Length: 294
Image 1 (cartoon, rainbow, N blue to C red):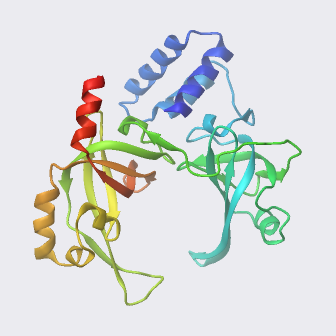
Image 2 (cartoon, rainbow, N blue to C red; image 1 turned 45 degrees about the vertical axis):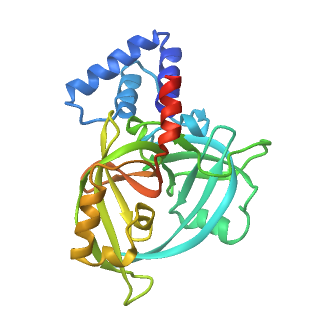
Image 3 (cartoon, rainbow, N blue to C red; image 1 turned 90 degrees about the vertical axis):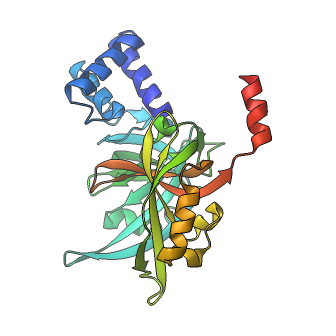
């Protein structure tokens, strides 16, 4: 919850109000809205009520929070991804993206405007380029740039930046969009696999399994594909067999493990979900040592 804590500190300092008072107002706003808004969203409402605006205020990457509309940040491009073409509702376009890092964290930057994408295609912006971004939107843990966003070279020197995803070893209370998270949880519900055709490899089937994790602080809907499920001890072939999968389903229910994955918002259901990339079995000896320390 580093982003939220950083935002809380900024609001308290800017408004000259005690941090506890700001947090009390945020919780009051969430209660008034029946919990249908995140802490970060409620914090931005409270900031506005206090006359504080973070529009285009220069921030570190770990200070950016979901829902910001005019984010301003400086960072170094550490990885450039291939530009992709898309077709939607009869319209065609391209999407560019790169990984941006500073000394606090990193995140993916998504480009929708043709001018910005041309900067990538021409090589004007490349890995190791330091850039300044203004008027960008934070969505799903990513920074999105549209036609009214500004993307330009920066003369700022960034010696050390995060070049890989920052892993948060915490709880499901830290499951915010864009978070790369490791939690210790229990599988409390498993759903039957959803089988679909791989669009990149016609004729090849893929599978997704939905399940619910509980770590004692919160629950979350999680997803794993047939390849990741091999780490659970489920052979890929068994995922495509209803009879075989039932046996694994019964065995996995109630299993406690370490889960590592990225969090994203499911816009259809308006909830944060965890895409599992790795699982680790609990080591009883390590647990005994850890319990002894506590």
